Length: 492
Image (cartoon, rainbow, N blue to C red; front, side, top):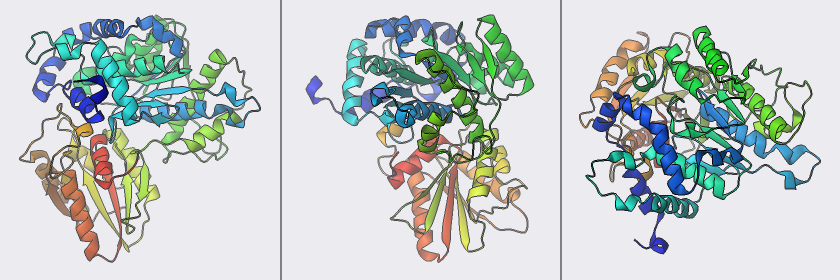
């Protein structure tokens, strides 16, 4: 394949070839060897790209982990720093060039790597992708080779590519979101971050991190480094104790921030919806304050929210999380998109939907839901329609995360790590449970669909026959939300 003829589609095809199928992933997750070799292998890959891990110290990294809100916190930090000088007297030559690495993506892989708030174009992504691909000599590894360790997995490759892009683009700050956990995460080759942050902790990824919040906190605290402030928010007491001990062990100054109220923020119009964002905003403000003091020698007064932070807080965008949309081609429908995928986050989603959705009889409400097989879908649904909720769903559509009725997945959304059950066992089970969860005084029809497009097509046809406005809540999985956005052709 000639370099000049390489396309974005070919880059995605190559990237997808690095995905581990579900059966292998399950076997690997039970082995401690993968943990022991993960970071040494990442360092070897970095060397093939021309860097030592210590070279990334020049990126002045903000490293962020957590269970809930870590992506939102990353987006807030990036927006605050990028817009910091917009309200100051200094010349815009002082503008902070930002790099942002997050996961997963919603619609297009380029979303994972952003420069100055903008995801890489397809051309930029393709060029950088194949530079990394060639340096790692991945074309030389043939299918069936015994030693799979010499080939980075999907997330490892995107992490390596992010470091590579940020070095080549000479960003002033790299905001790096942890994938899973922290201690053994691919991003944890970082040696001297400027500051580390831990968002709200809860139970998730138990297969990799453990069944209890203290075990999970141990993994998250693994990103702490000597002399780099370790900042967190209000946590369960046992988790907070673990984080403190992990910080003390590596000599990292430990800071727990107080959560802002709307009043203490001065009623700033935050660009992200939902009261839960106050926690993420509080963490982001402290991370940015520390970064600016260390890297720009800017000293702040005792004001809780520096005025220079306000533009970034107002302008931040983070699609697919507490996002409300009305599309011109479907004016009768309001789409509510939230990738909540844990018991805690689904309750937050329910609170947001109850506060945001218009509670009037003339509105029909439809749920689109899916979750991964290793999560308790029935418990998530119970949280969603708890007694505290005044919202009633007239219909519940349960579908897989397969995007389209034909050609199946959008290539960017191909996920080999999840086994697709063609018998729709999970979806049928959820549909059977649904009537038992709703109030006996109400009726709600459950429907099962093999793809996201099928579920949406049903809604569009149903709306043609209804004179009422329609509100659609999409939740349970970020992959589901991304698939819905792909089918609706929503920009991210």
